[in-house]
Length: 106
Image 1 (cartoon, rainbow, N blue to C red):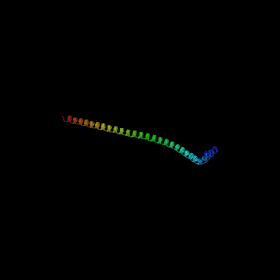
Image 2 (image 1 turned 30 degrees about the horizontal axis):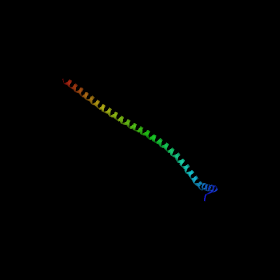
Image 3 (image 1 turned 45 degrees about the vertical axis):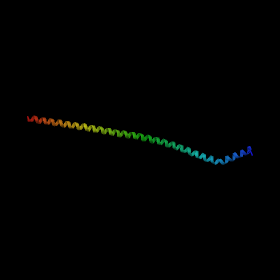
Image 4 (image 1 turned 90 degrees about the vertical axis):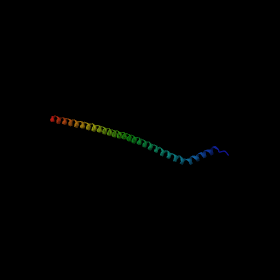
């Protein structure tokens, strides 16, 4: 038993009617996926801005602490040089005083 052209046409129309709710539901799903895609792109842009900000702040923080460390090194070096200088100045003053005392004794 072969189906006639009219039978095939009626079957096609029946399938279209039965599949119509599925097509509508798929259209809704596609619309929701498109919205999610837009949101994901917005979130991606926000994450890139956050990443950029964190990277910039990280670099500034490292630079700050690096400068602090460098500043501390300079302070230590200055304190060392100052201490040595003061020690030598004190030693020289002591020697001059000692020489004056010796000169007065003679």
